[in-house]
Length: 109
Image 1 (cartoon, helix red, strand yellow):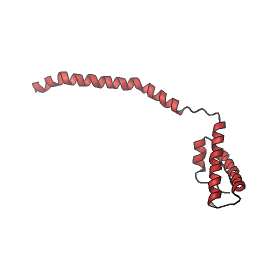
Image 2 (tube, one colour):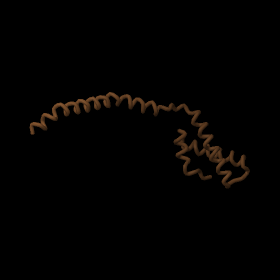
Image 3 (spheres, one colour):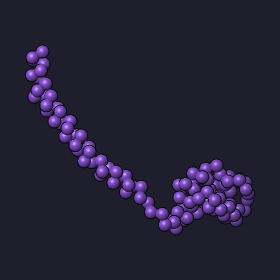
């Protein structure tokens, strides 16, 4: 049986391997066949996709992979914060310097 073209995307989104997603797809097809009693119509394919999404979600919940992406982003922003503050401080000093001493050079020229 052919798998959906978006199966690798669904697998990556759920954090499972493509082989495991193919196994879950076959299970979803069996469940859709038992549920609808038909094979190949729109209701059957819709039920198969619903079952696949449900099975992938259940599989994702059972995985022990921690979700650290948001934590890493926060740490990256916190690491850059002193650099951004220093850049703003130098910009303020430069503007102040230009206001105080830049006018003198324009008058002399």
